[in-house]
Amino acid sequence: MRRYDRKHPGIRIDKITVAGFPGLIFAIGVAVMFIIGLPELREFALVAVVVGTVVGGLLYFWHNQTRW
Picture 1 (cartoon, rainbow, N blue to C red):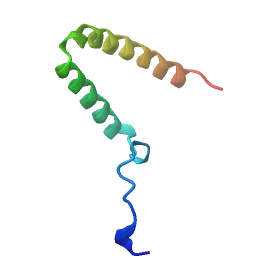
Picture 2: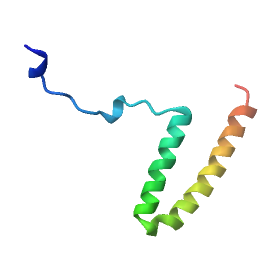
Picture 3: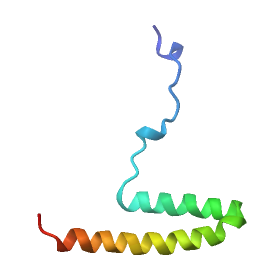
Picture 4: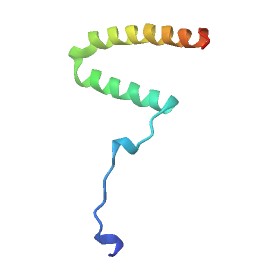
């Protein structure tokens, strides 16, 4: 079978590594695209950012203060 006879599998989202700082940039970019595209989500996005920041901070401090 020649190389050109095979079908290209395409881009698979599960094969794209998104972790750490690039993952943060990706998540922020997707959120901004949704907020720009759907203005009725702005209030929800503001609440989600506030709640996410509080929960993330609590989890960060909880994992760094407890000793297993």
